[in-house]
Length: 157
Image 1 (cartoon, rainbow, N blue to C red):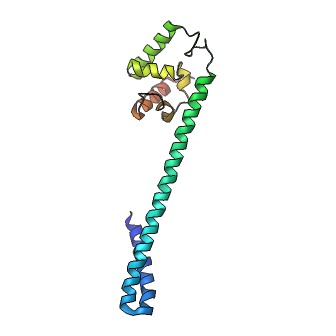
Image 2 (image 1 turned 180 degrees about the vertical axis):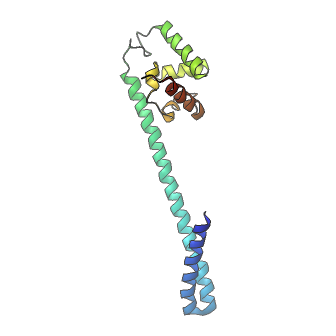
């Protein structure tokens, strides 16, 4: 809680306490101030938690959207176009996995997971965001950002 917010709650409480003080003397002033402070403080924390909850829901929606996008992209991949699936050349697949492992400086297992998730060509990474890559098993935020940086440094266009 910021000092400015605490000051605001205190001022509101003192004003309300002053109003109660006019009606009930010093006891009314103290009681009104304390009661008002408690109520405003509780409302403030309720509002903050409500805002955080909305942000978390928004973050979950972004991750869910990225997962659906990933599934759609994988489903749209055609066999024989360099993607995994029936008709993919096992030697080419192994070369691509080795290249990803070497270029991204990641383990072969992580490179295989990327390939298995539909990232079979360099251009597949062009529009990817870290949240997309983090849906792949073994890819954490740091690795995802490193992959994105590497792909952007290659300037594939």
